[in-house]
Length: 289
Image (cartoon, rainbow, N blue to C red; front, side):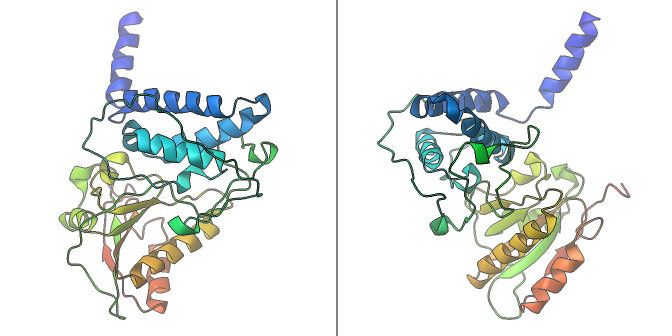
């Protein structure tokens, strides 16, 4: 049924994230650059694992906005054996962004240590230095040696008023992202997102919700996988506390409602133990809606 096939194809294409075509083209360019820098056949597994992590955890819109400066940062990160989820990118112009032309690579030194630390960026996760240890699980593209604490990318947001913790530094708000449609967010949830300094988001929050976070805010995408949930949860709390101590307005963005099939109550208790009283913004849950 060719007509039906065309209809299904149009339906699928209409549901793709904005900028998908640009993202495909730019990742293709990055892949060519990496192959030119590291053409050895024995590096193929490492190249595949590294690019898989980049493609899996960076928002599609940010992949579509890659520019020459971002290419250089990513190429440096690859040659230094640094997890791409730990690479910070600068502020971007409004979408759509034109595809960047190929760049002239600066000299890059391959790291000889077993691992590279990113203490300056606050990301401590590293990739193993050998291709064998960078192998992946069944197409997941995640290094088996990677820890649960790593950032995917960073952005940044304007300072505005919010609830303040008991110790006078920073504030923490647990926000329910609802069903994934920005129009179904509560007014308070949207206000919290657009006025935060730092947002810690669940991995499955849809891109249209994340687009509400201004480019001046930092966004961290939490990574939770079977067998790694507790470590990832510990990382979330530590990251939030670090930002709170700097006086930041922190938003913990959770799917649906923070307390329905989530760990919102646990997070409230954890922050209370450190002197911060979280504000909770409920969200629509698919369990009820």
